[in-house]
Length: 500
Image 1 (cartoon, one colour):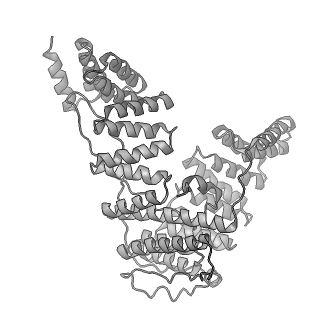
Image 2 (cartoon, rainbow, N blue to C red; image 1 turned 135 degrees about the horizontal axis):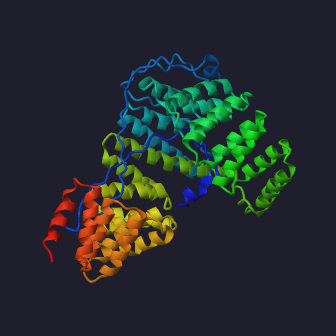
């Protein structure tokens, strides 16, 4: 199977027009592996989202409904207790079909199968209908997509994803007024979204509402100050509004966050020209030309048939992942596992499925499986210090100490200021037949980077293993000072007081 994750940036990122619903999250279980060693578990990842099913009187404007070929009176009659599954779009397979055409048909059918099975399992869930709507839109059945997103709003009138998807669909059809209406409602419901404000601002620009677009993007960068793309778009909005001073400010902010952001250099150069700062403008425009000439040549474009096949593959992988999240939100861990494993098996280089599976298996205590997928994730993300830290912590829990040590040293190599890696590695080095003196040095470094009660406790434990009892007492006393209610710290301290 091709590496879909790497190829995704070569195709249209819209891929169906909808945003992913909130991710399912699974919390870790905390266990100790040595009386004097406090293990550092990873953060967990399931957040349970409650969805209230209510009926809505929502319908799109008549002109939008007509342009989409949808009769708003027809879709509200179906009982909300039954899943809504519009007819799949039909495609005629040529008698002499190519391998690509046959593969496309298989991918299309599988995507619909996964999404329809999800709606059958959760007929009163707006997220499940939203996923199926996204698949219908991907396969150019806009009528079915709108019906499904309208069902989402019947089930939950405040389901922002449906408003967002309807707004994006209207935008692609050039109906900017309708798009604005839906997207403004979506932003009211999710003002901190990482996608809605960008789409709303893009919609306002063709309407000539440059000042409004800038106001929307100011909200966006307030919540996402490290987004270079957000700062560039805000600078462009100010540029269109004739505010060169603010355009300059925003483009320079974008460069500060991403020195390789080409559009920011160009925008800064234009703003500086308008402000009469010609020498500085020339410098930024020259940097823009230089950086653009240094950009690697684009890979040859895929043929339309191959490009569409790639998008179908991405659609299926995303559908598996969303289905897994929704099963998890409804407490069905088996359904989550089934769908995420299907995504991992379908795409041998899909990172998210492997990371999610590793977390899921860790949560339920299936450590061998968790290790397998964390190893695969690290192979795909060799320069990600968090991935190696996760692998190291899990390997400790599985008592694979040699593997854990190698993973943690790699994490430290990639991120030398990562206190947790030093703390976990210190616990390994104070095991029998290892080096307690090195454990002390590692634990001391963890305390220097993050002087928490936990790290003082680990340092005290390391010093106790190294025979430095007096110093160990001082460290445990500091841990108790920082966390006076911790029973484990107090018991360890009492034990040390009895030693000479």
